[in-house]
Image (cartoon, rainbow over all chains, first blue to last red; front, side):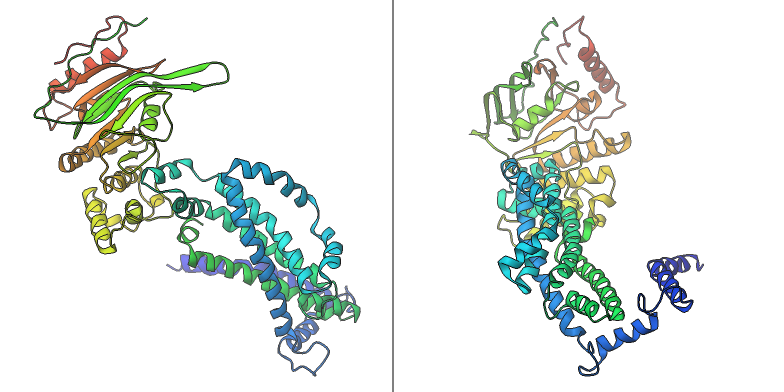
Length: 266
Length: 274
């Protein structure tokens, strides 16, 4: 009778097993002194540092209470860079997926640029845009563009021609066909691309922020390294992991709210 | 070379039935890497309004290509085709197709799939909903209106495919082996459903099949196709009374004759029927 509830409970627990094991290993390593605290602080110390960082009053200590402004700054940069990448990547991808001429025009260049590791753009971006906001957004947008573009293209290419024929026979012209058939048909791929792009956006956010901006989660990590605050570095890493995961869930949820095709096909 | 089959005189149509679809000397040549392949040669078809015509032929005879040309998806190499005296140039809702494969939109429910073609036709929502309800009940899918295509059976999918085009009131309906992938029982059900809808709504239907029994069950007139090149070899009116029963001796005799005629190259002539 309780078999299924038990199974549901277990599968709800499943995602937390690895993090729990990880924390356990961390505690053991710290308690037994296998790792010295100047390399890896005790979880409790990290917890306290995290608490002060998030909930403390500014003035209580070096990093106290900075979380909201840092997270806000980082989120804003990710959002701007990611939106830019999505606004360019989805239409261009769909276009190149459906139009051989556009595909031939773009594919060589896109693949060449894609082969350049994103970090190579950092020096150039610093020269062009200076340290800070614009450089970070440039890097985030550039890196997030490729998975979004490529997945949108393959999704659009993979839409069953029969569906487009069915639309044509029911009197659907180009424009409505694009929005009523092509985009929904490509939606699962577009969604995959957006989620991959968002993940990469967080990675390049930190890269952009490492260069000496005053606020942001990446900046805090870099700053803490110079001051030897390993606990704050760990706090920063954990917070980025949490926010990355949460932004992925929010993206998935909002796509499902906005589009029937995202809700019903993924 | 196969002897040409004699073409019997077309069924004397009762009353004045105007030809609605006219196809003259339609030819299609595909350019392949070696040599051009003639897929269709000199096809002539005249369909009267309300007629149910089956095009019967072996696989590879170009019957699907013929429907693709008539529905406007691919252009013919030569020939003329007119619907209601207007030349056919591109796909349009006055010539609807029920495809062999599942071509429903997987992100729309049964009701939304049926309503798809109505959107953008200036119908107000209440009227559109009434229409959708009516066609849902005509094809017997009212309880399934909110199901997604992946949640219903193959036979139900083809009912949706039928309803979503019938709701557009096409002047002719092209059906490309629509029941070929269904099991025998579902196929028979669908044939009966099609006939009852046809009786109610009296569409003009061009139905492509390779199944002799299906053709004899449905058709007013059967056009038998040959392959290499695809052309119409014989035109056979089916004068069996409706509703037809598949176990009726007349029905069986007719089917067998047609069947033998299709295979028989030696004796050649399909009998002058009836």
